[in-house]
Length: 286
Image (cartoon, rainbow, N blue to C red; front, top):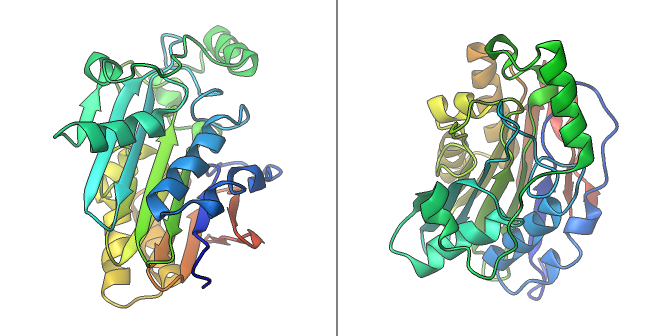
């Protein structure tokens, strides 16, 4: 590992359907030049939030009432500090989450309270035409009914993990949530140990139906295995296998150790994951 380079790995959200994998290389150009792992994951996720084809920031899905409610979390393994926001409407929720970490004594802020911290940030009052048309079709066809919640095509998130030249780790995750969710629903992305985790030994992010990650603290499970000596790939595969015993829902876990070892495993149809050398080739478990 070179002393001047931050190693960043990103994902664009697991899907229950088999679809072409988008390139995520644009999110890494500036991120790998960041001075710290924390700066690296924030920069990478900001670029993913700007990608209108992904479910984060501009391009996020709509809830059952046709409104965006965005969640994000960021964790600094070097200091143990964590920040998260839920139910917000800014273009870069990950940066608002970092503002919670940096500028308040709190870990997690929601709704109006979180938005009060968003001074000088761009506020979103909607999403892309593609997502609006998707919502209108679903409304007309009845696909927004509760029994369709978490369908294969409804699930995606973005996230990043990084390690810098000081072997410090960081993780960040951002999402528009599950398409057609009930207003006020909170997923796993902003919740430390569920969808985002970083310590001195491991950085982990997850993607899938957030309720499954909240119920299992999936990211913390992966991190504990790594901290006890497991390779990140083995840790991700073991926890994805465990999640499969609880639910058939698509799920993915991306993990990084302080020594630079990386792992990614998922259940579902497809999952784009990339690192400094290009697509990572996450292991799909049946």
